[in-house]
Image: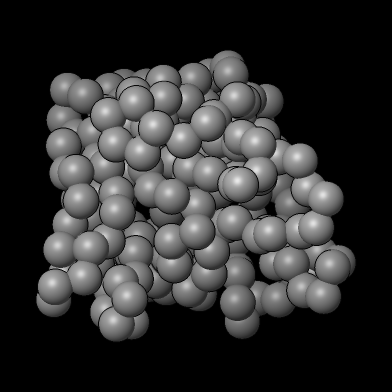
Length: 192
């Protein structure tokens, strides 16, 4: 497990479950096969209070997953453990989970998952994700430190990566094959 990673004297907060602590490879394969030919929609970005599709920013196909079941349950369990050991945020529920397919040239430029909106009772506090396959090139997930430098946590098939949702992050361009992954967000009451 990685607690906090220091990149050029600036801390990049993340926690990684690897190997036996991640998702077993046969479980990863099961979900890739299950969703390989499922109906997808284009991933959207938030722009001026409305969702829009901008493939220059986010080029991914997605399937909305029900929280608390299937592969998402692995992410939730890991996020709760990482939160207990590190951040101790007030986390109440998993608000959303998405199965993501980054095809050739797919990417998601640097962004954050946390957005403050006035009178918003619950916010995303932790983002947790996994990569379900390893037969693609490119598509590396990264976090960004305060100096704008990228940090690439260990991201082998089945690893679970957890970080505060306010952390800058993204997914580099996939050059070959398809990158299959799942992301889920853990929410709690607005920060006070």
